[in-house]
Image (cartoon, rainbow, N blue to C red):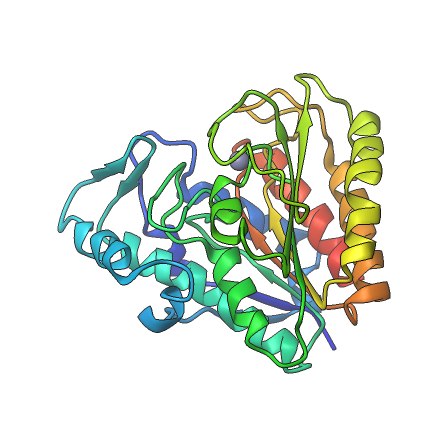
Length: 305
Ligand SMILES: [Zn+2]
């Protein structure tokens, strides 16, 4: 059962002006996966646009309409402080969410137990009814909601190792104990929202500026591992952001490629013990092109092996 890789070239047409979340990010990820021979080991497919009904599993229709109708006919328009739309942005956003929804369905249907969605825009900052931080629709949350409709899925875990806190994912699942959300993030850092939740199923792991790989591994083991084992998720989702890399221009954490291999192997081991091996991973942040490509390749290599 080769792992599934879903992407679409139209994820490149979403443009923001002089912005770190740029099309070259996705090009770098796909080129590095190809160079390392990973794409040939995977069952590659083109994502399809998600239906509005499926987006409505997470976002209210009025918000969806606001996003889709905001797309400019030419140029670039600012949707919120950090998030812009260009011609093609709506399609890219629907393809990104569509990739995660399809990956979820195919993994739950038993076609493979691993999937990686190489997509943009990312999703984990998108709240129930608000775009934030380069995100329009919360791709991973849509996948998790879809998974919960499957009779075999009673509990889900979303593990987010992007360097930014997943305010959107927490907003969406803060009152749903079926969905454990674990987020590691640089402390006192963007976006400063939904950090005050003490709910048992929301696990926040703040990282001090300069946190090393060794410190990171020890923190993740002490704050995530037992909680996930107790939760026993039937499927694990990964919000795979690579901006905690030491070369990333937006943050100040010191991870290297091998730390992404390590955390992915840890998640694979948890999934093999509790989740019938089922993992759906989706690209979130990562803004140094080389660090992003190499880290994503280390992640995917650990996911498919
Ligand atoms: Zn990020």
